Length: 171
Image (cartoon, rainbow, N blue to C red; front, side):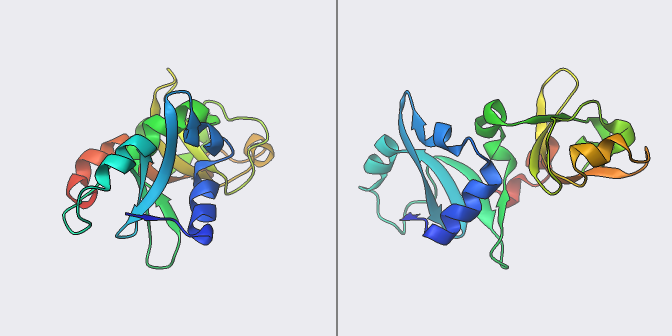
């Protein structure tokens, strides 16, 4: 596994959000991001040191896969990162249509964090605050307040059901 370049670090940190520092400097140790075959892994430095004794050709993965770089150079988060990002994320709420892979309409929006800008990455929660997945805000908070109920307010990116539907593609 190799360290990320400055450009790739910037892309990953933009997708994760402002609280990425809390993911790296944790009370239980220091964590880092590493890349292998265009996939980004979140791993503790202790595990990273242990994995150094394994040959590069024999190492399949280590840590948690946070996402991958697309062929166009963009970074997409995987649902496997949800448990790590959700505690630090700003919450929006929507449910059933999101779990089936659909975008969220304003009529399905329960609440949204104040000050959310357009095209900001968001974590989608159920009404009982269970994290469901990731999305991208199609409208800002101000635009959501004055829009039609059938307008899209969140573009679907990944959800917890996707992990089961496409498990063979995640490794």
